[in-house]
Image (cartoon, rainbow, N blue to C red):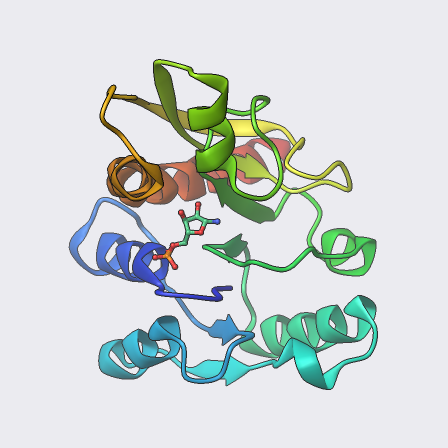
Length: 187
Ligand code: GRF
């Protein structure tokens, strides 16, 4: 699931195709027609469905489209790789322990929107990103993995976000592998 540039989506595809992730990206869903992620899916030959949130009055209806699409594709795990919409219990309940999100802060600090701006405003010297399982507690589900980056004096939103982004690309494939391992362990 992606809303914007889709660089995390591409990192997952690359990790599957070139290692270290043993898996396959079966399906992308985007909510913004024409977004970078959609273009990347075309280039990478991954089926992409557009589920435009503007065409659905209720969040649950958008989640219904996501569930149908992923069920038809036969996925084991669903990754919110830069998905900028709040998901509802409908989607969360359809993929228990199987729905992963990446967030650009060291959770539990700086949940919600503009996490990078929040970190800068708080004056922290260390930030990073968190991959976690999605529960109904927004940005509060069990943490799978985290990566840290320094916050430099001269940082602004763009420079800090870029440093975090680079770590997200490393972290997300590892977190997906961990989530898969957890599921196997649970039988
Ligand atoms: C990432 O920084 C992610 O943490 C946030 O949105 C950004 C998505 O980037 N939720 P991309 O679309 O994967 O390039």
